[in-house]
Amino acid sequence: MTKTAAAPFLYCDIETLPSQDPQILADIETRFPLPVLDLDGIRPDGRLKDEAKIAEDLAKKRDAAVADHAAALEKRLANIDEAYRKTALDGSSGHLASIAWAFDEEVVVALDNENCRPIDYVSTPDGELEDAEDVTGQGLTMFDELFGHDCLDDTLDGERELLTKFFGEIEETLEVWAGAAAVDGSANHAIPEIPVIVAHHADFDIRFIWQRAIALGVPVPAWWPVNASKYASDRVQDTMVMWAGHGNRIGLDRLCRALGVAGKTDMDGSMVWDAVREGRIAEVVEYNRGDVRRLRSVHRRMRGLNPLLIDIDPAAERIASSGGNLDTYVVGQIVAGVGLVSMGEGEV
Image (cartoon, rainbow, N blue to C red; front, side, top):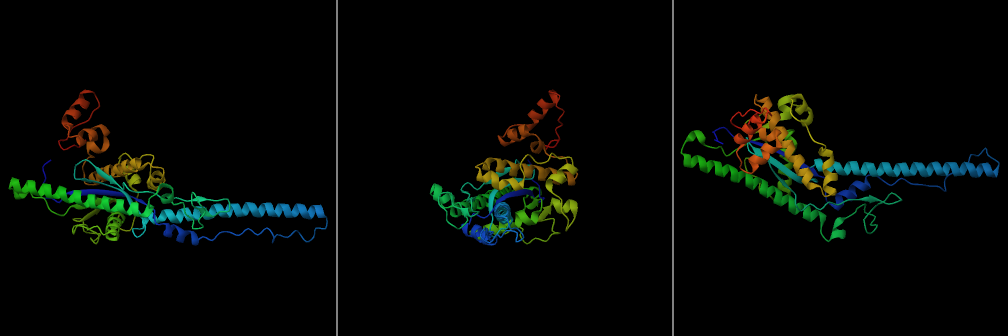
């Protein structure tokens, strides 16, 4: 592909995890006190005189109290789980599970947090959160005790490696393009050092990446637009803002439907944590890659361009990823009656 002097688009999307810090989970638990079950304080109806009826009344009230207590315990655990999951949206406590990105019309690349070792929690009959091997009273099931590693430290190490590779691979690509332009000797083919970041709800993705990098001591390239103006389209293009306007929202899946782009798969962002806990990180990465394909497709639609073939045809993406010839594939599809039309740069 011929690179031009226009700043390259860098399409980017992230998937995040709740905090793997046991103390944060314990702090959340303390915000939701255990409901008290006081069976001794239950009294029968004072109007009753018959012993059998008194006993029956007490039994009914105690059964009701036990049922109410069980419901309160269940609600408490649900509240803890909801509050805990929300830490995935906070760069001061959550973590990166994966990052996917693509330049201009290149194939989507993705990296995951290979060292993530999730913590978990389970409930005991009395509603306490317990360690999987030993009731700690701290509201935790710490997998480091089960498997001999530290959940938090491993996750942080994985994040550092993920962010270092992410920034490194992007800068390496920019340097390769700049080097090719220097050899070419034509100013018309020079590659700017600053890419335009394209994301959906860009404020979240861009700042979360910056926050995690700062927290982990990973150097952030000067071009990363954490403080770019919302109106600086030469630094950031947010497809949510482009479509809905500043201060308004639209989900990527809804925007895809509006623009006739294939929407999300069976997974959505709310399922990422469960998938990671179950060891299905590969599904999370593929979901992340899919979001970048959809992001690029809606961004192109809003610029009057068709989606790229590699973003809507898995076979075409596999061919491009392996360095194959897409034109040959397109011709083959047309001959087979599929009806694809080659537009020269991978469009359909």
